[in-house]
Length: 295
Image (tube, rainbow, N blue to C red; front, side, top):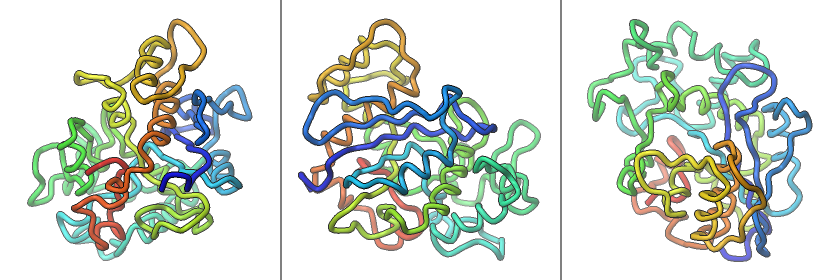
């Protein structure tokens, strides 16, 4: 896999409402080396999700794109994304289409139309007094909800993922993941999404990442993995064998996540085992997808 890509693009995503998001950050690292660099949004108010979609769809150089979001929902644990709902799709691409279709009237790739749908909403945790009645399906491992096989693998590597069915709290990833799935549906097959799609011999590839995994390899310890200073960021980059970025003092964690993860993708992408996790089966790839780096 070494030499397969000429650059590595990390996208720290956001599921917040609004046309532009300060919480979206993009950073790129070149295969030839050098410090990772932030990609400035076209507007100082932040990135629009459609602009990120257009950038990925228009990539010319072979790029490994890491999206910090869940590209699918749990399926294997219950044999379906939404057991008991006739509209529950059979695979990840069907899920993306369902979400985008139910959100067609919602602008900015927002996911409100899906989480408010009278049937879909029943599977999500919405908050105290408004938890979906199917959030805790029989067989859910804990009261944290349902998890994918990839997320079980993440736990084995010292990080603690949150269920993609959770819409509550600062650590929730549900809204971010659902908006990301809308983007993936709009992307179509312009760029393959591994492992939902087979890994092509050439060209760009999109995959799911989890920035906490990059932070762990960068030497960040403890329950929190967010980096909020240039000194701490450059220490982590050094642990990944990357040159430092310029800057002093504070840095927002969206930018630091993107910068560190771009360098991490460059560092680890050539490890064959990461493309062949032992518990990743064809069915899991087709339905749940995977988190690159989880073993």
